[in-house]
Every structure is written in structure tokens, then in C-alpha cells.
Length: 307
Length: 139
Image 1: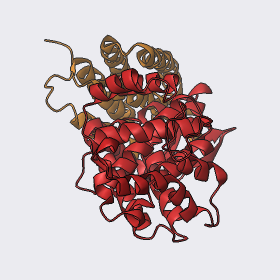
Image 2: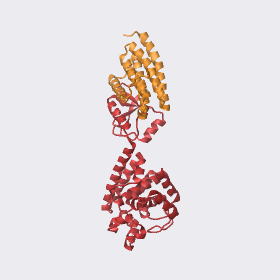
Image 3: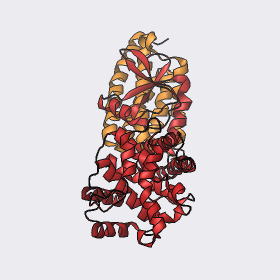
Image 4: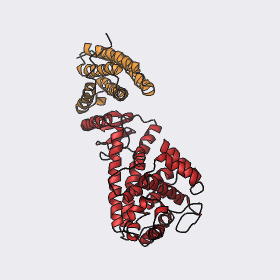
């Protein structure tokens, strides 16, 4: 043992919590810096060490108190309060970003705001998947359109990750989910009511504005540098159904990412907008909307929400 | 000054006991069986006795702290603390190993700073069992 380093066991470290001390590995009798104090040991690295049967890692003796503080933090770690706190923070970041997007949907910053919100949800839910469950049923003081967007986004992320889509595609799905309705404030002054009432109760003028919104949202964004065709496709088709009974085009041809957002959008609208209980939403989907959405995705969503 | 032959004997016997401690902590890692923590306390107690007899105070004190942790953790009910006891006792064994080797090969002995830091860890951890009165398993 080198004089100034003391051992700690890898098993005492909880992944994804910033360490607060320098972590070293011993390789060929040399101590090498492995994780810097400001960083957490992320799950892949933690699992990698475990798979290589690494049991011991080292700290500098001057960092002993910091290690003790870290352990205390892990011992007092309350999963439930942590999930709620993380959900509150993530929803707050997302809500701020969506508010900025709605205020200036054609701004060149709309995409950046959406990516920021999407990343905060993606990162938090990767760290702790329980956050997703909280976001599914988000009840906050925010505007109903914002809550709907966050719920659509979280639902779509859960589905996309479940079927193991590439994480870059999941990011596109998350970004697009938050941008689907950005044209609504420009299309109708009372657009908030669109989220709470059934299509059958819309006036003709309202219905026209509502049916236009997917195309208009995509148009607002199409010239923004950095936007990609996947994101634009998802936005333009988020109200389409594979039965061809959606709008604005009534197309039956949807990509997997478009099918995911279409179903997630429908689910969020029912839960957040129409305040329909979860069980009733699925009853309705499986009775009245068979053929409208991908059956496998519907089953996965049901399973995820029952878990 | 301890006779070299006596010191050599202590090191050899202690090495056997340290190997047993390593086996115990390894098994605990697999099973989380608290009985093993009590066994740890019994084995380290033997090293402590020999160390104090030879007036190896520093080794004796480390063993005493390790023994108390082993016994107290074996009676604890807080699962998180019990699970932490195994890894911390495994570190204790490693430090003791270096200290014992250092009796013969001076260059392997941990620095005083490292020993102080580690003693601090054992005391800090022992305090977490303050609601458990007995530091042995005798009734």
C-alpha cells in the first residue's frame, strides 16, 4: 500500500451521486486518478469495474472525511423524496423552456429551449427511471398545455426506451414531443380550451385551427438551423393515426417514432387535459381506438403504467 | 525492543488470522450473514490480544475498533449499516495487513496520516452503532 492512499470498497459507492473526493485505481502498483471529486461514478463505469472483479479503490488520506460525508449522504438517501425533488426540478426546467417556446415559437432559440428541456428529462430519467412515473401523472400549477407537453414527452421517452430505440432517436422524440403544439397560441386565443374539451365540442373555427396546428408547428421550426427531418416529421404527424383517421393529412404511413408520439400525445391529452382516470383511458383506447394506434405500443404503455 | 524471533512469530500467526478475516469479509460480501461479523470480531480479538501483549499499541487499537464494529454490527438491525460493515472491515483487514508487514519491512507501513485517517473512519462508523450497548457477544 502506498503511504498516502487508503482503501475503500467499491461496493460502498453509490453510482450517480457526485463523490466529492478523488477516486483512484491501483494499476501495476501505480495509483491513477479515476473519478474527479465533482463527478459521480456513473452506472456503466461502476458496472464495468464490478465485471472486472475490482473490489478495492483508493482515496487520498486527506479526503477521508469527504468519503465519510458521502457515505452519510448515501445512508440518508431517501428514494421517494429524491424522486419527488428530481421530478420537481425537471418539470420546472421543462416548464420554463416550454413557456419560452410558446412565447416565441418562430424564434431561432425555440429548438435550443426544447433540447434543453428534453435533455433535462432524458438525463433525470436515465439516472432514476422512477422520475418518469412521476412525470406521467404530473400535477403542477403550470399551464395545462405545458403539463400536457411534459406528459407526452415522458410517455414517449418511456415507450422509446422500452423498445430500445437508439438514444439519439429517443432525444429527437423527446425534443419533438415538446414542440408539437407550439403553433396553438398563434392560431387561437382560447387555445387552452383545446386541451380540455373533446373534438366533438369544438366550434368549426376552433376545429379548423386545431387541425392546422401540426403543420403550422412544423412550419414555424423548419428554417431553424439544426432542426432535423425526424423532429419535423414527428411534429407534423403527431395527430395522425395508423387507421388514417387522424389529421391533418389522414396518412396511414407513420414511422415508429411518429407512432410513439401520436399515442403518447393521445394519452397525455386524456390524462392531463380531459382528466380521465388511467384505467378508463386504456378501456377507451382498447375499445374505441383499436386500429388507430400501434397495438404493441398500447400494450407496452399499459404495462409500463401498471408497473 | 521486541525480540526479532518473537516479532517474526507474531507476524506469521497474525498472517494466518488476517487470511481468515479476508475469507470472512469475502463470504460476507456474498451472503450478508451477520453471524460472520461476529466471527470477524472473535478472530480479530485474537490479534488484538497478541498485539497488546507485545505492546504493539497501534495495531492493538485498530483491532479493538474492528472488533467492536464486528460485534456491534452483528447485533444491529439497520440493514444499510450492516451492509456497510463488511466493506469497512475488509478495509480494516487490509490496513492491518500493511501494518503487520511494516513491522518487518518498514517501507510497507502506511503513513501516520493514512493511519490517522483510517482510525477516524473506524471511530466514525462505530458511532453509528451507539444504540447498541454490548461490544462483545457475551450476555
